[in-house]
Amino acid sequence: MKVPFSGIRVLELGHAVMGPTCGLVLADMGAEVIKIEKAPGGDDTRRLLGFGQGFFPFYNRNKKSLVLDLKASKGLEVLKKLVLSSDIFIENFGPGTVDRLGLGYEELSKLNPRLIYCSLKGFMKGPYENRPALDEVVQMMGGLAYMTGPPGQPMRAGASVVDIMGGSYGVIGILTALYEREKTGQGQFIIASLYESTAFLMGQFMAYSAISGKPVPPMPKRLSAWAIYDIFKIKGGKIFSSPLPATSSGRAFARSSAART
Image (cartoon, rainbow, N blue to C red; front, top):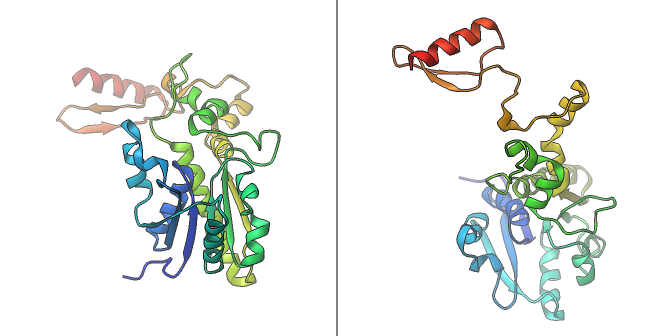
């Protein structure tokens, strides 16, 4: 079966979760993704233990790997040759790293004007743009940990949700740029970030606060849009799943159902 991105070549300079997620989605859609790993031992996530043991096999399936020393002229020369035949370039290095290596968008777009360059960072343009960031850090900064934990106990979400979301937003930008390239013949620069992804996740709660004028309770407080939010086994063994409308009849039904469980 022909997959959608057959014939698309991607260079991925990604590490940990965010960059590899972006490359992974493209690889799963059929793109040829070449993961550039650092010399001499390759990506650090190959050697992680504990929860990190699954990082490399999960986020790097369907990819090819090439080990290069990008601090050496020969390694840079090989990479730039690959840029000539590539459609997409992904990087999620720390702020300023690709520019110091001579691999920024301005340099690579001169080699290949059709190149779509996706930069994945902690923050977009602004006062924090040169700061490093991690998934857990922005969950705390952006309020996601506050919404996840019980009152007074902020808690990191149980998966790298912001890394994954930021990488996925990178894919959305890449898909849009590929569509535009069909009309213009030109590539472009894309940026997606961790903090702004967290802000989007928190958008409904920002709206809640603005409309109600009240502090937003964390989700475990269960002060939601519905009076009841649970699963009950009712008489006869059937499963009833709410939410129920916030009406007196709904509350009475739920109480009587719970009593018969």
